[in-house]
Image 1: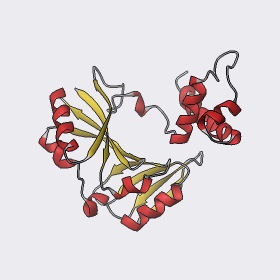
Image 2: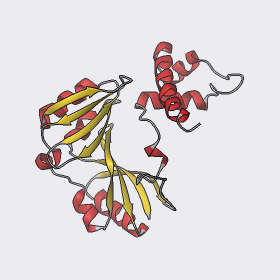
Image 3: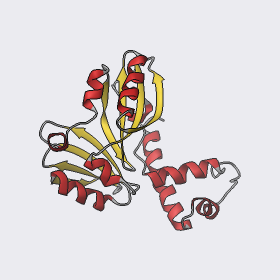
Image 4: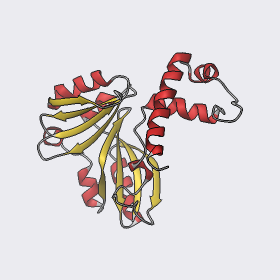
Length: 216
């Protein structure tokens, strides 16, 4: 089995609601509504647009306050259609939930038994939409107890800013002994304030640590 991750620029209202923001939506589609997890700094703006498109029936803030679970009043597919589905069917591919929306793009994990199907899926859909390939790999085995097939099922959801700050800190030697950089220097590299860097770094470290301690 083979898996590829594609970023697809389409006309989905969920995609459009994240454009120009660091906010991310993860979606689990149901027959009559959508279950969303919204994270990032502009959650309220994104949720307001979602509400205007399909309505919001319920919303809950998660335990750490970084994201919100949203239940919509209607299924987006009923009103806007799933524009990716015909390409999946035509090329004998499967879509692995949850779907993700970030920076104005729909991010999908696509499975196929034959790598040629992934190539033909990409060729067909890229003729109509802008598509970026994030990764493509052969799956030798599934992760124990889950159909997700990758470490993505275990890793926490970091916002784009948290991911950027953490990776910049790592690349600049912040976690070396002794440290090769400071939060002030990281802030200068990214172009934000030192306190902003320290806030996002703490939140990213907390999320990653919470996951790791369960496996130590």
